[in-house]
Image 1 (cartoon, helix red, strand yellow):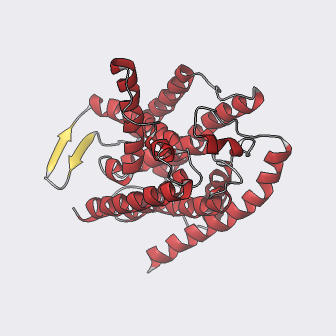
Image 2: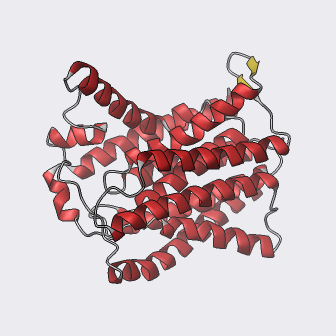
Length: 330
């Protein structure tokens, strides 16, 4: 019962603080003209979103910091090294995304940071994470508990971590294309890893990671009040990179790395659809999808934005629940 109470407290704190932050920050973003520039290459229905405030990821980035600080001050949460790692990655990727969003707003285009600069920065954050992880005695084993298989990867595990962090941040970023889509899927993913964290009681700081996950779930729920269709604010790269980074970090620290492919299954599908489309166009001069990532394909087929989001949320929920079953019991 105590675990349930702490989870609900964290979720509620995140939700309430996010609503307050949203009500305060959206008028400021409008006043600063921090509007999204919508590409004409996307479905024409998106053109009406031109000028909608971006950098809205701050609405769910600020609450966990406030909530963790409040809980720490009253002794309700322990600030462990693993929790510090999660917060470091979460805020580092948020800062990278903020710089990217700021440049897009400043120069009124969708270029922002160059792809190479962004990739190098993501890799640097991942390297710092791995260095701290190793310094704290982090294991370099990859385990498939279902089959009783355990591989000691050594330095190869470091490369795996870099791939997982960079891959997940970009996968979440790619998925952020429809009102509420990325936010809803992230809620399911962090809810799953919150449960998995509670079940990983042999890992130092497991409780802090669980509470962080539930606070973030509540914060994203608060954000969705402003981001569900029709969106009053977008999360921008500020939000999507932060979510992807935190998600991969918790998966690694709880040693449930492979569960991420299932729990974040829709993120994987979105990324694969973009990759397949790029290869098909460059190598075979043809298209597999009408537009990529795949949510735009369904838009081109005439589906409404809300219907696409509902279907993707349903798939994401089922995959996340299967991921919890695998992560906790199998």
